[in-house]
Length: 149
Image (cartoon, rainbow, N blue to C red):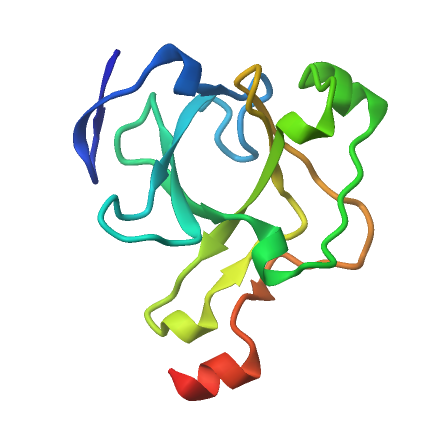
């Protein structure tokens, strides 16, 4: 099906590539269908776009938190696993929303509210972690990388 986006124009998104958020994203109650798109189709990047299929202007930059925080821990409750119809963790993908300010070395990720995706079923949920181990503005650039930039 064709979807109009502000960044990418008209896109053909296959049904199997649509991510359904039964509970929507926090703060976006009407936004229940998204697609993951490359940040830039011409370059390899750890970042992706989470593009709304309802609101053409709404898209979030997301990334795999384990690339930046290898020790990142996230536990899903039984009810969350049931809602996402998770039968095996091998089908699960985790993404976190990234904020990239004008000074890109100050980019942060929200590690408190990861997006958990069951790729096999096309179901997704934004989960709120209740432990105090993470914050909503976790720096993605190490001091060493900031000095190089």
